[in-house]
Image (cartoon, rainbow, N blue to C red; front, side, top):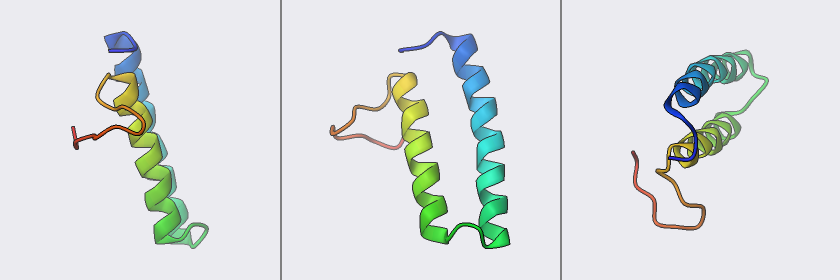
Amino acid sequence: MKVNPELLREMKKLLDQYIKEVEEAKKSGALTESTARTYLLHTSNFIKWCNGNFVPGGRNQNR
C-alpha cells in the first residue's frame, strides 16, 4: 500500500463524488461516453495504484 488506510478511505469517498460528476456531465452531453469511460478508468487506476493494486505498464487485474 502506498497510502495509509484513512487517506485511502477519503480518496474513495472523493472518487464516488467524482464518478457522480462525470456521469452527470455525460448525461448533460458535456462528455461523450468514451471520454467519460476514459476519465473513470484512469482515475480508478490511480486509486488502485495508491492501494498497491496497480502497476503502470504491468499486467493488472480488476481488483
